[in-house]
Each structure stands twice: as structure tokens, then as C-alpha cells.
Image (cartoon, rainbow, N blue to C red; front, side, top):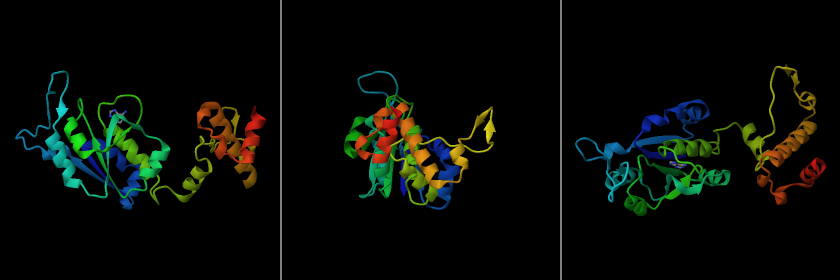
Length: 236
Ligand code: ADE
């Protein structure tokens, strides 16, 4: 999976070289190509923004500079995304569908935004990571890259992927590790039993309980098995 990121702040993306994504990059499972929009400025001072027509606060990114940066990576099969609070809110379903793409071009705005004409010309899919406003699209782009990369084959180990499909659409069951007793709190007995079927049932029940308690709107009755419904009924 290739990500081309158009940004004024490529250094911000360095944190993606750590941990799971760092290993995925090393193994060439994902490729994150950072394009500094400033490199496409024709101005002798490398200016990329200017004051807004009509007046008002802040600066606006120039359409010609952004467009030249975009054209340097454009390919007909690429999916182009603009990170903006005006976009459709990112969710796991969207993440999964984006992971099926081969090539994503992600445009990050900064300052007061980008001249509307280049947005109209490129016509990207607009994606928001939530109903709050950040100083730029870089953190949202990193959220997108991280969440999408998890679905790229080989990035997570097989066990994590199968555990995730086990609790798909539900919140995760709680996890425990050593020590066996921490501040008088014990690890649930069933997890030490070695009885795989009982552990599976306990975890499924915990996922259902936690989802029902914290995010009941996520529970879609039609997706639940008879065993799930029984667990939920017994709770109520
Ligand atoms: N740029 C600034 N805020 C944003 C948000 N919430 N989502 C996506 N891009 C953004």
C-alpha cells in the first residue's frame, strides 16, 4: 500500500517510523512518501500562502502550489483524500474499505485552509477524524494512515487479526497479564483455567457487556448470534 502525503510539515510524520508501522515500512508492506508542498513554490522566498480575498484572519494556501505538488504524484488509479473537518467522519468501515486501495494520496491543509479552486479541481474525497478543529491535516492524516495500515496484510500478526474479527463491531474484552494479583485485584479465574472454549465464551460475554454498557448504539441485534442474545438477555 502506497501513501503519498502532501504536506507543509513532513517532519511531523516521523513518529510513524516507530513500532508496528515502523516495522511495516521496513518490510515494505507500506510505503509512506512525504511530499513537501513548499518544494513546489516558484517564489524566491518559497512562499506557499497568501492573504484571503475578501479579508479576514490568517493565510490561505495557494492553489497553484498545491496543484503542482498534487500533479507530481497523481496517478489515475490513486484515491485522493483531503483531510478536513468538513469531511465525512472516519469510522472502522471506511478504514477497512480504504485498505483495499493500492495508492492513497492524502492532502493536508494548514493555516486557514486551501484555496477552494484547487479543491474543486482535484475533487478529493473529504474525510474528517471528528467534530473538532485541529491546526492542520497532518495529525488526521497520521490517524488515517495508522488505522488503514492495520488492515494491510502482514502488518499485524495473524492472531490480532483473528481476535479483531472475533469482536468485530463490538468493544474489546478486557486483557490481563502478570502479576496474578495487583493491589488486591485478581486475574479472572477462567483466564487461568486453560479451558479454551470457556475462555472464548467469557471474552465474548465481556465484549457484549462492555459494549452494552459503554456504547449501546454499536450493538446491532441483527449481527448477533443466538448465544450472544442469550448473554444479553441474562444481563437485563
Ligand atoms: N483538519 C483540521 N481539523 C480536522 C479534523 N477534525 N479532521 C480532519 N482534518 C482536519
